[in-house]
Amino acid sequence: MNSTPSFSTGATAPTPAQLSEYLKVANTAALAAGSVLQACWGKLESIVEKGRPGDLVTEADRQAEVVILEIIRQNFPEHSILAEESGQYGNLDAEYLWAIDPLDGTTNYAHQYPFSAASIGLLINGKPMVGAIFDPFHRELFSGAAGLGATCNDKPISVSNVDKLAQSLLVTGFAYDRRETKDNNYQEFCYLTHITQGVRRAGAASIDLAYVACGRLDGYWERGLSPWDLAAGVAIVEAAGGIVTAYDRTPFDIRSGRILATNSRLHDELSQELLHVAQIEPWSWM
Ligand code: IPD
Ligand code: CA
Ligand code: CA
Image 1 (cartoon, rainbow, N blue to C red):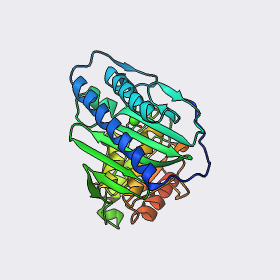
Image 2: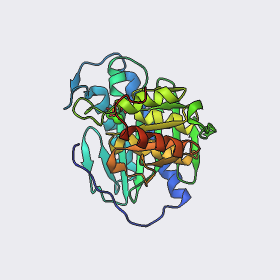
Image 3: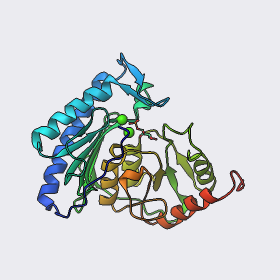
């Protein structure tokens, strides 16, 4: 999917009961996809590059997506869907748009590095409001919806209290276009590694966001992402008390592919440092 989708800006607000129904279905679909990911683990027959070097797809991605699509369509046949492997179903401007990443962390999965998840988010009027992320390797289901709070395996979760970057543990990632652009996040990664307690690069954007939501990590930034990487995690971080914006703290736009998500207390400081590093000479801070 290379086209830039445009999203609805309609105004009908869902009720808590509706949100909870969407969340239930998202959870069911994420768990079902997780079973597929477990079944295919270590038995892959096909691992191919989709386009850019390193951007892999396997039969596990495809099979998990089929299972998710079936469950979403059965329950909400009138909703639109944007799914990483098979594309777009219905209008992307629709009031209800599911954004589906059947296997987030495919590179990890293909190398049998057990850190991947199925990620299912629902955009309502263009805003991520419901999310379910299931990591089958740690058997953790992260789940949340606007106004309903967030959970991990049904237990409430919330963001951390860390309020200084110098005491924080962050996470980021590098997009598949990193060899083609100077905007590759390398300098941001090094600079923030220098001024924090550490920056992880775990390889699954959805789990990065889930870990911010449950306080294992204090903040996350990345560029070059797609709506299916972000929708579920954004809904869960916000439901857990975090903040999600663009790097410069302007409103988050899922089409931009750029995200800053934190526990809220670190938000201003991390934003300032990201803007600062973009303006300085490479490595001048060392
Ligand atoms: C990737 C992962 C990774 C991020 C990449 C994504 P995929 O998704 O979320 O952490 O850095 O930009 O594309 O390809 O494994 O579904
Ligand atoms: Ca992904
Ligand atoms: Ca994927």
